[in-house]
Length: 127
Image 1 (cartoon, rainbow, N blue to C red):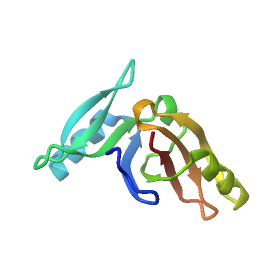
Image 2: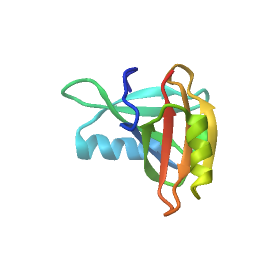
Image 3: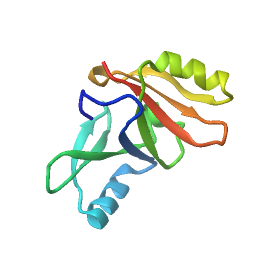
């Protein structure tokens, strides 16, 4: 993610699965991505990187820590002006908050919401 993302833009995606190493290898071999480990404390998640540009394309994450409750799925991150305001609007419009607002350190705040149809997305507020 860059620090200049536009509000409303899908700015990142990651995949949460029980065994990120196996699925990392699957996508590395199928898509051609390289991988970079991301230190999560007592385990590593992975940024999958374009072999042509060296830029991160997506993340592959273990279903642990903040991701423990997420089903195996690709999760898009949509930039918003304010995570707090977006959470309020989500609830007011019949959606659910699956992961309440949390800090992503230098990347800002995020949350995970479910829309009234059941689709899931993360919302991210840049610092």
